[in-house]
Length: 195
Length: 195
Image (cartoon, rainbow over all chains, first blue to last red; front, side, top):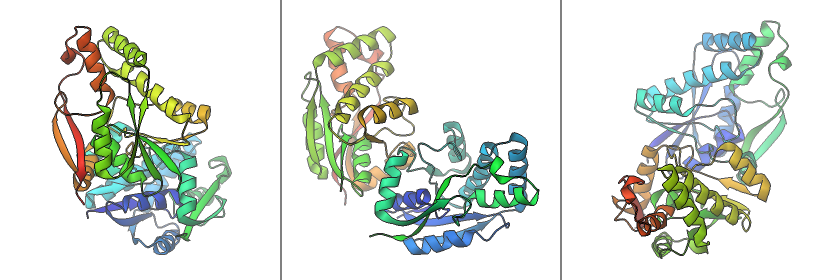
């Protein structure tokens, strides 16, 4: 089976994406770390609990600094997070033939447009797989709950390794009110298999 | 496991969609027939060869007549085929909680816009699943070839139960040159499991 690198936060979306692909590919989970926090450890724990290989991929702190500047200037996180996601996907595509993430139909961020997907695939000669992109949040929640043990809570409390965690830290360091950029929302973290 | 109704032509896309979903749901394949041809039989054969339950859902001939008029007026099949697909999805959504199809990322037709998907889901209280919507043609071809035995050929020759087969017949009956509306393209039909 060919190996697919699945960008992984420890949340239910990227966990379900990995689970779906594991029927067809050897799954390797990848978590980006920008050196601000050690939140990648939570992803590593989740990965272990659901039984997939896991790697941490280190990136320069300046990527997340630049994204934070965009977010401060824009007043909302969309462009900054997409900027990070594209950097992470490109770096992953340099080292892996199959690159996947857990973006889903109802996501607004991060989100690749069709032309960005084709550009990524053509530039690096890879395939980009987003197995949740045709599924709605109801379907994803229903499936994830059946498969995984999940911890849920407010985004500030749940320990996850998504881009947001490190951006929040930078924004706080710079003296900004995080909630002006990231309104409180529910987050989930996978903490084991249900079956 | 909950049951999902997967719209099924016997081609590799709808076969792969069914295969992916079968990890999480009980799959029932559904083929639409408009009473013009008995092309549903090919889908029934393919369904049997890959081991899924199969039903034929009969529709009024006038749906495909109306679609053909749209196609003749437009000079291209997009709107007519989308019209049929929406009718079939709505009818299926009246009788099934989970409704799926094999539309994929690089498809142009049939294709539901995000607002159409949400309208379908809200109107009928269903979930719409399109598991190939986040996968490109390379990925789909690679996976399908690994899983299924596939017969390939020109669209006129391959015996499939897609909307096109019946529309072609109507166009011919009306004296039109089919190739003016449907340029020759490769089609596939699944004829068994490889593993």
